[in-house]
Image (cartoon, rainbow, N blue to C red; front, top):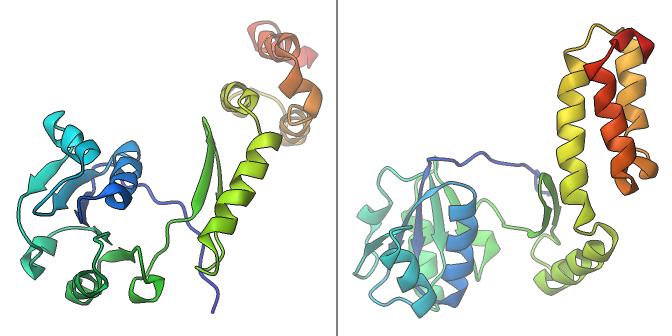
Length: 207
């Protein structure tokens, strides 16, 4: 059965990460970047995780995992170095919770794909757990194609789209313009980007 790819808005959502090691750290950072409220359950913390706690970016329960640690949380990530503990975490979660188990994807109900980010551009690569290593290789290859210039380009596209959407142009003209600015020449030329946006500072009917 194929997985269903999805982008989640987890800003302000409660997330519990069980485990305080380096693997847990990577999961924690991605959750923080997405705006989640993260609680870590672990009797010990890796130095990087401890720094997040000191900087008040996470909450920390200095203890072994108990099923009650999952009460009222939305996202659960089992990221300890013990397969038994991770399995126990998964079995303790409710049907309404999103669960990821780092060493056994079958025990959870969602996977975290390899990700390439360029500002507003996100490209995710997953192999259904067959080879996380290959996912990373593919992401690295895509990074050579979709370089850092895409971050600024996507910012331009976002602004341009809003200007076109709120203009008095016909639907057909709007569609044509939005397609035009996805041409490579616009990504490579900030002058063309500026010229396009300046059109909306003058008479839009001339477009």
